[in-house]
Figure 1 (cartoon, rainbow, N blue to C red):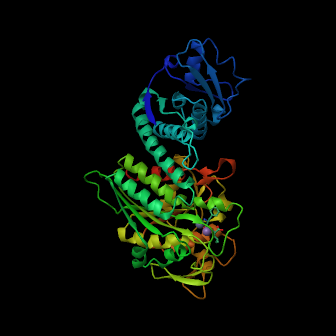
Figure 2: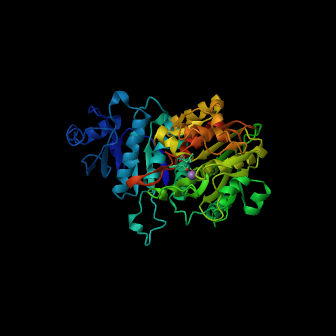
Figure 3: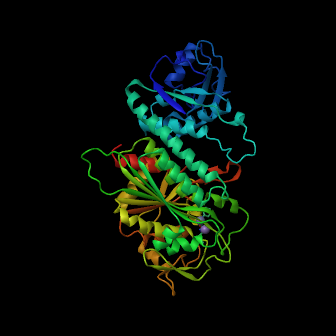
Length: 503
Ligand code: BES
Ligand code: MN
Ligand code: ZN
């Protein structure tokens, strides 16, 4: 998608197929709506209060409005003026973008970012706008028998009107939002692809393709023999029930840093890449098992973030590590009670083969030590318990480091991709006691604090560096009629990375 910005106060003279103007719930017009309304002889005011109430995200399309050059004026509700802020802005911009896609438009213009927004800035508003257009135009038909090109969204060009003083920041935000949109689309497509296509081998090939696309990303894809040589016995214990061979993917991005900037060691992202999670011998119930094709959404978010920062030529160093395999039951699968040896040397009693995410992540966390990283963040669809705790609104954030936790929470807030902090404290470590190994892979207190004990398990492998864990089980995909990958937490991760290099 192509994005552009310009500044004008003559909103009625903007030539476009659809122009979005904001209207508050109390009938108050935004400056742009006011200009258009006057030019149109009160045409907007005449529908407000009955046809259109101005609820957040409400839209009303007016065709051929006399006195304005736009082919359509789209009234977009901003909600109550007193509570207007970045969240209402995002809902409004998303609704407009969806409306444009529904109208099959190829081009659209929004004046919504000219409305003063007390709790954000022009750059973030522009980024959210590009994200809104890009996400609305996302369409999955990769596995339809006869993909119908006519069903594909046509929106190709999105223009964002801005206040004159903001133009530079808006341009930056649009560039970031365009890269973010592409990153999220990749994350969503990898998530949406079924397990019989999106295998560990497929993900490895995707990584190689990304390496070919960007000179700044060096990729290596380790195969089973090399993974064995590294001593990743925990990772391999999950892979061994499947006929699909595992992969360990390394993507190393190096941007051109400012000449005097001293490297503190790279930031490492570790993504859980279970391409299908049956539960293994501790098999899952059938009802929603299909959704376990999304169990590689952590890995997919590493891909999406890599793509976005490479597009933006981010001036830092980022390593993406992805352990990827299937979790299957079979004659060769790991059994409950089996003891496996991790790359760190610590042994693990596998009491439940469905707690497999931590078993592949722990070896990747040990592998991360070789980079002497400044920070390691793992991203994983790790526990159903995290969905019980936080639902689908917040990702779970765990870190023993208060500063890192605060930075990630703040990034999530700014990017409207929020996380909520849960504890990782030594008091919970006792739950992982085993009589037969250094630790068990599940807590012995049943389902109590399941997301926390999972994080505590990982903490045992992340002692050599600053570390945080994001549990995205509830946020990385939607269920029901809207079933599909969301692209989260790429917005949070990108905002965190941009902040680290002073943007
Ligand atoms: N991939 C699942 C977590 C999950 C479940 C994410 C449902 C989203 C929706 C993970 O591998 C898993 O099965 N975790 C178990 C852990 C338990 C056995 C301690 C869980 O959450 O039930
Ligand atoms: Mn599982
Ligand atoms: Zn899983």
